[in-house]
Length: 142
Image 1 (cartoon, one colour):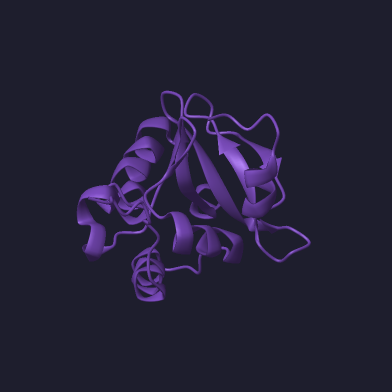
Image 2 (cartoon, rainbow, N blue to C red):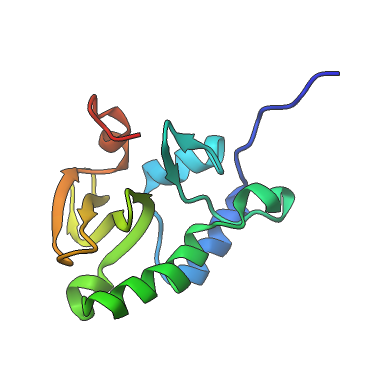
């Protein structure tokens, strides 16, 4: 018996996530999700979009993390306001730090810059100019 390892998602699931998040996801992230939704990058879990066709693998979705876990972290750290509103976490690193798309800063590609948000300070540090560059980082955690 052959096991299907294809995981990806559909444009419809991505559109539903964008509607739930109230923003358009970066194109390179969308392309990655179409092929890899629900997969990790090594030890780094990249949040998938929820897809009913693969609910078990995608229930820990970017939508759930944004509306639940992320909002709780912002409340706990007091990191609310315009700067926090521009961030969309797409992966959790370590014990509370998040990789985020920073919609306040655009890369030359027009996509949101990738930053690492510290749960201890609420500060961000730029990691890559966009998601495609993040994927190509040689020392990328995970």
